[in-house]
Length: 283
Ligand code: NDP
Image (cartoon, rainbow, N blue to C red; front, top):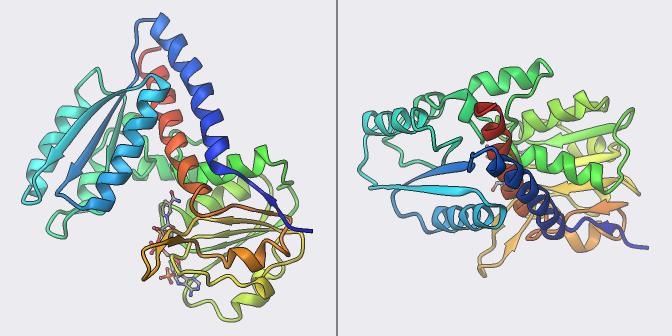
């Protein structure tokens, strides 16, 4: 019997419907939640991501403030723009689309965002709060993974969870969120020896390495929940995750597809963060 497929696209639509109701309640108080998306340069993949976030905003009743800047924008100009958005009362969430051009100091720019408007959850203040178990605005991709586990009915407390990847935007916050839900958590990375022996012990496996189909069926415990965060472009142009989906879905208990899994949930969680931020900033 194959795994239960956790349909991220359908779940994201449901989250957006819920957020639309929440935005409606804010509108009754005279607040229209607003998201500013800052896009620098003309990277086509980034433009696609920005459009999908703007579309989700429209669906949920969130207004967007589209800020496109030329590729030659300097770090100082970026900081000025972030200052303006920090001070704009119509803007409740600020999102800087990554990657930024190499000449811009991305760390300085991201840390300049007002933590109250940090809907990506990347500022040190947001990450520190998450570490201490008091999430302000939590990073959207791991939040989306956790909501998928919850709504699919995957037990987390007391289970063995393994996260492949230790980035600050996915792997580490995912591990913290699993820990907070009382899983026993192992974080693996490129220097982890005997990876398969570790992943085979996992009841929950979150894969965020960015390596196409690196997680093969023999690395997965029968019945495990496998959440595939990876988005990889193959030479033929198709997208695939970090998980060898066809083989693993025969063995896993739950699995998320790519595309149509964590990706749409990430976008939905951005919207949820904007509405949460708007609620706090206007209460
Ligand atoms: P990073 O490149 O920042 O991090 C990748 C992590 O994977 C690193 O910690 C790296 O280890 C680890 N890693 C790489 N190769 C291996 C390996 N062979 N074995 C074990 N660990 C390995 O990526 P991100 O965290 O930003 O993103 C990860 C993936 O998720 C990418 O495919 C990205 O496109 C996708 N993504 C998807 C999102 C979505 O909405 N679905 C959102 C964000 C990202 P080390 O630290 O040692 O280098």
